[in-house]
Image (tube, rainbow, N blue to C red):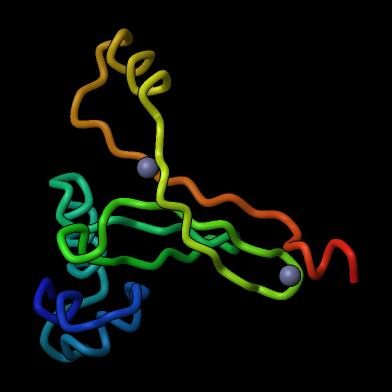
Length: 115
Ligand SMILES: [Zn+2]
Ligand SMILES: [Zn+2]
C-alpha cells in the first residue's frame, strides 16, 4: 500500500488505493485500518474533502501541508504553512498524545469571487 502511495504523484482515495492493491487480495476495512495506522504514525497525511471523502498521500515524499479549495470551481491550491502549535498545546494540556490533525480551507477563489 505504501509502495502504491510512493509511486503515485497525486493523493489517492482509499477506494482507488484499494483497487490498486487488488480488491480480491484485501478487504476495504483492512485498507482503511492500515491508512488510519499510517496516519497516526505520520507516514501518510490525510486530506479530507468537504463531502466526507479523504485523499491520502505519503508524508515523506509530500511534506505536511494543507489545501485551499474553491467551493465553486474546485480549484485546489497548496498552502505550505501550517501552524497548529497553539491548538496542539491545548490538546496536550488535556492529556492527549500522538496528535495528528486534518485541515482544509474552503472558500471562493478570486476568479469565482469577482466573476
Ligand atoms: Zn473558483
Ligand atoms: Zn498541518
